[in-house]
Amino acid sequence: MLSLKYSLVIEATDDPLFFSFYSPELEGFTGVGHSIEDCIYQAIYGMKEHIALLEQQSLPIPPENPDPKVVIQNAPAAVAV
Image: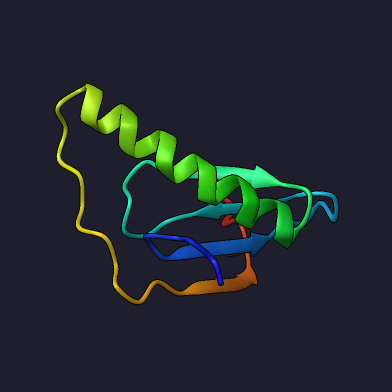
């Protein structure tokens, strides 16, 4: 069982050596990993650190999700400007 307190989105990138991840419920929380497992591992500990920083700065902390989801998807295609 994963000990995530917020949902997590993991996206495959054009580079096969990297995945990106973020939480749609935890503003400003992002990261990269070398595999899906690496992203989950980093997210578990990264979310704890992110919450601690929010607390230190007296910023609002979103309520924990009682049923967090992990979504794995392709990263959106870049749009040429």
